[in-house]
Amino acid sequence: MPILEVHLVEGDHTAAEHQRLLERLSSRYAEVLASPIERVRAYLTLHAPEHWAVGGETGGAPAPYFTAIVLEGRPVEQRHRLLADVTDIVVDVLGAARERVRGRIIQVPPDDWAIGGVPASGARRDEIAARAAAG
Image (cartoon, rainbow, N blue to C red; front, top):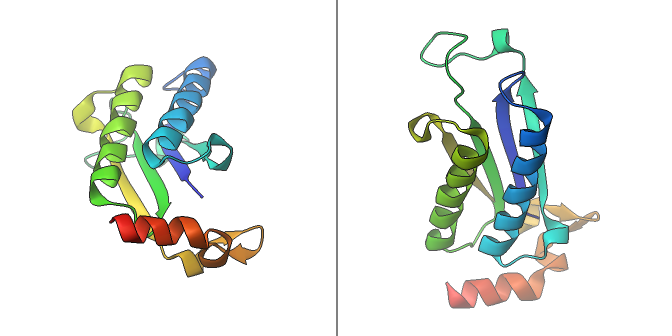
């Protein structure tokens, strides 16, 4: 299920940076969550410059924002590492100032996430049980 979305301002970064960002984020996300990379979905949402404001002003320095979606039950240490590692990659690849990067993790109950039309609670029952036992 791992889903990662990064919001950026159109024109702040090159297509090559976008590609490198998505590749590195996907790989790290799979590593941190101990999830097969085939399950990871990473994408960018680009916003027109006039549709983005930081501190009430448009046109400032890049201030990337990301959302990571994980199934409920992931250990707090794993979630904290994910926040730190995603921030590190955004800073490294895009050259964004660390203090301007924001991110959050959304935990989704396994009954509220579908994999091929089947709730994750059924499709990933053994994995979810193992995480709960370890946590």
